[in-house]
Every structure is written in C-alpha cells, then in structure tokens.
Length: 581
Image (cartoon, rainbow, N blue to C red; front, top):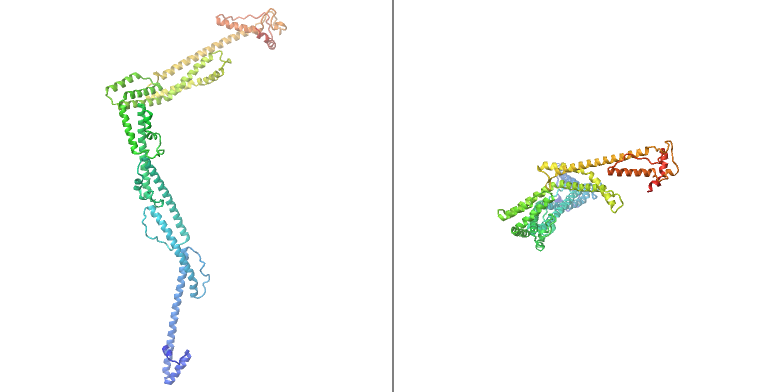
C-alpha cells in the first residue's frame, strides 16, 4: 500500500480521510459491491490495528529495556558507592523525576566518575598488595613472585586501603628492623673473623651470597632462614673465640710460670707481648685483628714446648724454688716442718732418676696447692691469734705503765701514753671474749679435720689454757694486792681516828676553842694538829716498811678537844702552819 501510494502521483500529502475518499471513488468507478467494500474496509482496519499493535509492543519493549538500564545504573551506582565506601556522591542528582531517558542521562556522568575512581582505587590496592607481597616474600625467603596480586573489588574503601597501608608500614618497619639486625650480624661476623684471622667473605657468603659488601643494603636477604643462619654463625664464632682465648690464656700462664721459674730476661718476654697482652682480658675485650689467630696460638704452643724442654735441664733449681715457696706458705701458716729432710728427699729423687721431672714438679705443685688450702683453712684462726697476741702485748705494756709512779707527770709524750693506755684497757677487756672465740673455733677446726691445731709446733688449745691459768693467777694476785692495800689504808684510818678522838690532859673537856698562839702552834715549837697528823702518818708508813709498827700515837701537849663546828674554823686557820716545814 505504501509502495502504491508512492507510485501514484495523485496521492500527495494524503491523510486517512482523503485516502478513504479516494478509495470510494475508485470503487465507484470499478463498480465494487458493498459486500466487497465492507470486506476491504475491515481488512484495512485490521491491518492498521496490527501496525499500531506492533508499534506499541516495540515501544513497551523499549521502555522495559530503558527501565532495566535505569535500574542497572542505580544498582551499579549503589555498588560502586558501597565498594568505594562512599555514602553519597556529588554528581548524583537529588531529584529522580523526569522521563526514563532523562534519569539515565542524569546518572551517566556520576557512573563515569565512579568507574574512573574505582579504577584508580584498584590500582592503589594493587600497588599496596604488590609491596606487601614483596616484603612477605623477602621475609619468607621467596623472592620469585611474578603473579599480580588479586584485589577484592567488593571493598575498595579508604578504610580498607588505610588498613593495607598500616599493614605495609608494619612490614616495612619489620623489614627495616630485620635489615638492621642483618647488618649487625654481618658486622659481628666481620669483627669476629678479623680477631680469629678467618676469611670474612667466604664465611658470610656461606650464609647467603647477598650479604657481601658489594651489594646494596636493600638487596640483602632478610629472611628468617638468613637471620637464623647468621645467628648460628655468630654463636659459633663467639664460641670459637672463647675457646681460643681460653687456650691462649692457658698458654700465657704456662709461659709466665716458665719465665718466672727460669728467670727469663725481659727482652725475651717482650717478643711475646702480642700473646700475653690478653692474659687477663675477657672475651668481649679482645678486639685486635689477628689476636686469636691459629698461627699465633701455634707460636705460643711451640714456645711452651721449648721452655718445657729447657726446664728439664734446670730441674734442681726449679724444684728448690718450689720447695722454698712451700716452706714460705708453711711459715706464714705457722706450721712446723722439716725443710732439710724435704730438700734431701728432692735431691735423692732427682739424682736417682726414678721420677720424671714433670711428675716431680706436678707433685710439688699439688703439695703447694694443699698447703695453700691448709693455710686458707687456718687463716681465720691465725688472724684471731695475731689479735690475741697483740692484745697480750698491750696488756703487758699496760701493766708496766700502771706500775710507773711518774706516769701522770707532765713529761714529754705523757699524753700519748695516756691515750694508748685508754685504748689498751679497752683492748684488754676484750681478751676473754677473744680467747673464748679462739677456743671454740679451734675445737671446731680440730673436730672437722680430726687433727690437732698447732701453732709453730705447739698445740694452740694448750697455749690458750696456759694463758687462761696465768691470767687467773695474775687476777688473783691483783686482788690480794688490792685487799692488802685496802687493809693498810683501813688501819691508817683507824689510827688517825684514835689520834683525833683522844682528850688533851692539859685542858678540860668542856673547852670549846683555844685562841691565841696555841691555836697555830705552842710557844716552845710544838707543831700544829694537821702537821702533827701528817708527821704521824709518814712515821707510821715508814715504821711499817721497816718492820717496826707503832699502833699507839701520843697527843701533842697543846691538844684541845673542840667541837665539830669549831674544828672547821680551827683548821682553816692552821692551813699556813701545816704547809710550812
């Protein structure tokens, strides 16, 4: 129909009405019946309905597709926002009104921006994952990681990215720490190899080739296996260093002993200063390169062997020196021995040749060791014996000092002797406790060892018992002297009392006081009362010393009995007379 209309020039700009009118005219000309006309019109109407219906279906289908596209766009938008961790986006229109195509056009720019942002975010995640994977591979020792890391596009939020960045920072920090530890281990290996005289490059290459200095610090292996092998290597080198130092110090001690035994001159000793310089050093203090090299230890061993051979030819001299050392230990320990017999025995053994020189010296070394142990076990008791003897010397000096009648005179050095006497009294008072302690410790020592404790051949307990007896006798003698002195003083006091209480026959008892010259002395030269008393006391003392003791004292001619109060004034007036000759 459309083709016919296009070919017919009469159609022009036709409408449905004009076309239907034209059709009526044609039918009239042709002479179509009404029945055919009705059929034709029904057919035309049906064809028109089919065309409309098809167009409507197409339009409906297109609308469904557009709605699906809009829905997918909204879902994609929501998914992108969720994946990126965004709650909203500036490019999304707030109003969702308008046609479907308008809504799609409004959402499209936002989707484009979100897709671009997602691509950038995925790249960032991939970079972080690659770095994390690389560091993890370095720590695990697996450096051949070529596969691209998988990125979870469902969660591309900044929070997740920050978590990965934090994880990366921790790994980078761990890598830095491991690298620092590796460098420390390598430095330790270098120093140890230098001290031990070993090849550093071969040692560190055996651990891992990347540890040599020619490679950069960042390319060095930081794996767990490398760290473990480095630590093991350092421990092995330290143990080797410790053993070598111990061996070298033993050789050094042997060298010094041999030098001292054979009086080796200092010029020869200085040749081994590089060996003896570490005799007292600790393992950490030895840091000089080559200080513990094997050739140096071999050099010391050769020298010790040479000196040992030389020592055999000087056996007698060395043995007598050791015997002198042994005797000196016994002398300091106050142990009595027979040195002459010991020296004769040494001479006999050396001359007979029945004993090896090394065995003889070893036996003497054992004797010296036992003597030192014996001296050490006696040291505490000997120290207290020295204190006891020192206190006894001070006690003897104090007795001599107390017997000196002029000790309080203002002579030169008297104040020093007085201070010494005060200290000596304090020390003497401690002697009993010191003796008791000595006895207890000596008995404990004897019970522990089952032998007697002798001091220069004399049993110490016997010495202490003897001292205790002598001290007791001396205390008793002092007590007797004090009692005798007290008895004499008491007798003199009684004599003075008798002399003072006897009444004068020249005066009545009731006389209270004498005034005038007789108070101080009689006219014919009779001494005063105080002077007479002093004279009688001196005379009594002299008579006692000479064996003639006079228990009766005669009163002076002018003696007057006076009261107690008057006596005070009387004697105060006679002080001048008493002091006169």
